[in-house]
Every structure is written in C-alpha cells, then in structure tokens.
Image 1 (cartoon, helix red, strand yellow):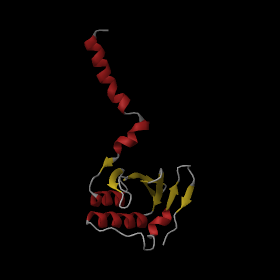
Image 2 (cartoon, one colour):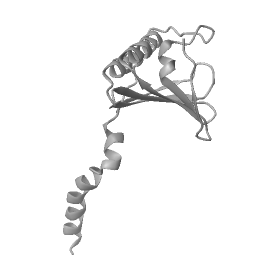
Image 3 (tube, one colour):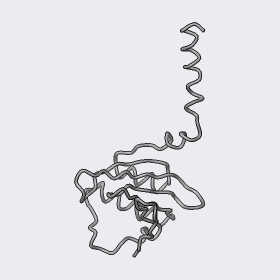
Image 4 (cartoon, one colour):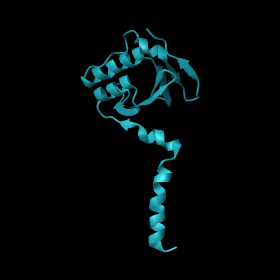
Length: 139
C-alpha cells in the first residue's frame, strides 16, 4: 500500500478507535477549575472532574470526580492522602450539601475539621490502599 493511502487508512480508522466504550466515559468527564462551577455539576450529577490542593497536606492535590447517576444516586469520589479515596453514592440532599461546601471554597471560606461531620458523609465510604471499605460516620 502506498504511504499516502496508508496514512488515509490510519486517519479514517482513528474515530473508530476513539469510540471504544471503555474509554468513552473518561473522555466525557469535563474538567472544571472553578469550585462553584463544579458545585453546579455536582447538583446536576454531570460527569466532571476538579482538582484542588489539599487544605492541610502540602503538595497533595485532591482529585474530585463525579461519575454520573446510577440506581438513583450520584457517584462521587475524591483522592485522599495515603493512597486512599472516598467514594460516595449521593442522594439529592447529599449532593446539595457537598455542593454547598464547594461554593464556600469558591468564596475563600473553608470548613474546619473540628465541627460535626456533614450529613452527606453518611453516604460515603473510605477505601483504603488495601481495598478495605469503611463507612464514614455522619452527623
């Protein structure tokens, strides 16, 4: 096959490769820099990601991810120090509560860890580096 025809064949095949269902979901998640906009995506349960520095662990970036709705709940996760992550299946009330925290962050306010845990945390688990799941206690 002539080189020009080979390049055309590769070019025409590229969309079929990009449409692989295994990678389609990852490409669909919009990256959002503004925490207030991420809050809106969370309330709408729109697949999105948001990265932010950890408020207490210098050099650690928290990767927030909304995976979309499944079985009546919105999938949300965030990375945590120590190779852990938090995974949540948020109700409408849980999404609203967590979205409020992102809006506070956007306004430069940060909730301290000394107060009672928000109610939305009852809808979450901590997944350890060994895969063990531990429910978060909620307020």
